[in-house]
Length: 249
Image (cartoon, rainbow, N blue to C red; front, side):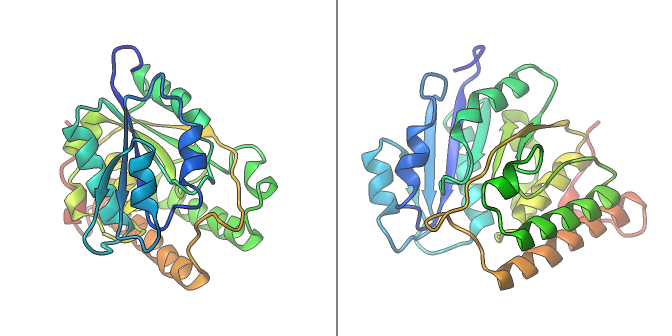
């Protein structure tokens, strides 16, 4: 708990048995009240390990996709009383030690959501991010900043925090069940008028860490551009997009 607010960390997992324990070991349980893992029908021992580590574990009966996994995570966290929900990939690419700082930014009242950026500073390439992924990240972020009229350093992090109010009001059921869910959720929050903060985060790329392949990355990239373009067309009054819902009063 932090300043009287209940903190939950959600871990959307698929075949994360090799990295889960290392990730969980760095989570500060002095302030984190709830640890929730959703196993998206892994073929390894992710769910068994999660239960042994004391995590509240949900198991999908079939592989539903990354976005669907997050929907389950967020619904569970809100249902279990979280005031702030931190979503962290359990692949040990991001530093769980930043959870208190991210939660504090929301507790401050200045931000409704916080993104942990691998691009701020020199963390990305120094941490082993492949050059092609770094360049793709930079190109997509530039395009998104132009279309969304924002100044984010990156949109593609697997480490982000949300206030309960954001999660209760966004129509997340309209978002994709695939990887583009992350970006669709961001544009929903921007459309609703919520305030984002960013924090610099080191990254680690290594053999056991999860990563989508080149083909899936290309599909994701086109999905990201489509999301940003639809947002711009909606805000220009050219083509309404039902995914966005209503603007914040």
